Image (cartoon, rainbow, N blue to C red; front, side):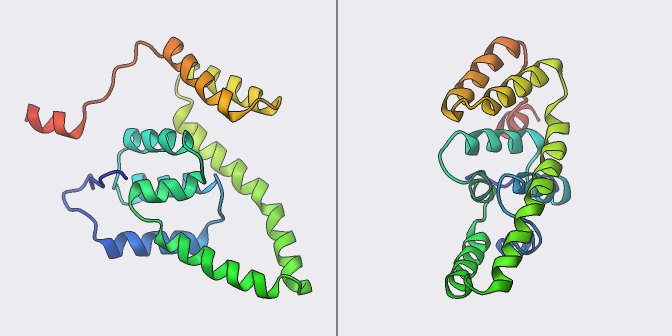
Length: 182
C-alpha cells in the first residue's frame, strides 16, 4: 500500500479517505474504467499522490493478478467501501436476480460499460501518450491483445519495449531524496 503523502501540507484523515471512496463507489461503474476516476480523486482533486506515484501504482496493480481497480483503491489506502458495496449488491442480486426488472436493469447497465471504458481510456491515455515511444508501446500492446495474445506475454513484452525505447528517462526524485536535499 502506498503511503499517502498529501501534496498539500496535511495528511488526510481515514474518514475523509473512506467518504471519498464511498462516494466514488456510489457514482462510478466498476472495472478498469474506475482507474481514471480514482486518479481524478487521488491525484487531481485531493492531491494524495502525485502523477508519477499514481502511474507506478497502476503498473504495480496491473502486473499482479486480480481486479486492478480494487487493488488501486487498496494501493491508495482504502478498499473497504468497495467491499461493502460488493457484499450488499451480491446479496441483493442473489435474492432478486430472477425478477424481470432486475434482469432489464443489468442488461441496460451492460450497454453503458463500453462508453465508460472508452472515456476512461481516453482520459488515462492523454496523460500517458506524451511521447512517441509511449505511443508505440501502447499501440503494439493494444494490437497484441486485440489479436488474442495473452496479457502474461504482453506485459513483459511492454516492459522489454520500455527498457529499449525509454532507456534514457531519468527517475524523478523520491520524497526522501527531496527532504535530504533541503
